[in-house]
Amino acid sequence: MPTKPLSEAKNLTTLLIVATNTAQHFDDASSLKRLKVLDRQQVNLGAVSSGSFILARAGLLDDCRCTIHWENIPVFKELYPQLEVAFTLYEIERRRFTCSGGIAALDMMLKLIENQHGRELAQQISQQFQHDRIRSGIDSQQMADRIDLAMNAPKLIDVINLMENNIELPLALPSIAEKCKLSLRQIERLFHKYRDVTPSQYYLSLRLLHAKQLLLNTNRSVIDISIATGFETQSYFTACYRRQFGSSPRNHRSQVATESKG
Image (tube, rainbow, N blue to C red):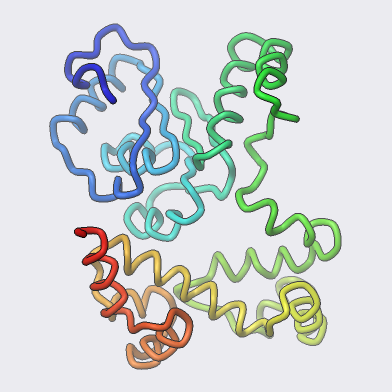
């Protein structure tokens, strides 16, 4: 629990924002104004996971790379399209530092300690926490899901990255194959072997997961979300969504809203 309001915090050198997963709705004018004042006072400003929403809302991430938990990236990009959002564990740039949450917060703090006090001290602290290594800022989130591909099918990672970066305007599979220097047949074999789905099924699943995040974390209309995730008609989007998640988009949103109130 906080011991004092932000307005009473004096002589700060560093402020770290830790927020709940509803932080995208944060809009307290006095707090946002105070953050801007602290920035002008040269205070280092950082965030863990959803805290990045608050720094972004205050306009304090506009000139640096940043990150946030992978589940929040679709919504974060929709709300702040001007930002350079990375899929990394953490980002440290000048007086800003953000991380994806969880154990990545430890990696980020160890890196900050290394930057200020040297590698040896950071390693000693890491060992005290039984942390086998200090992961770098370029390590990607969801590594467990990708480590088999990194070792056995790195070309498939290229295909998946291309799909993830083209949600609103989905690429045709022949175009993806050409950009990745693979044949359609090669891509089909890779998805069948390592993900047990067709490339089209995987791509559709990515788009629907993106849609789900927008649906449950923003106030955008269903038709806007269908367009933002590359569906030509709302009816087709609704049918695909129901097949994937067992409920229509409207019903799913209403159900989650009711559960959160309860």
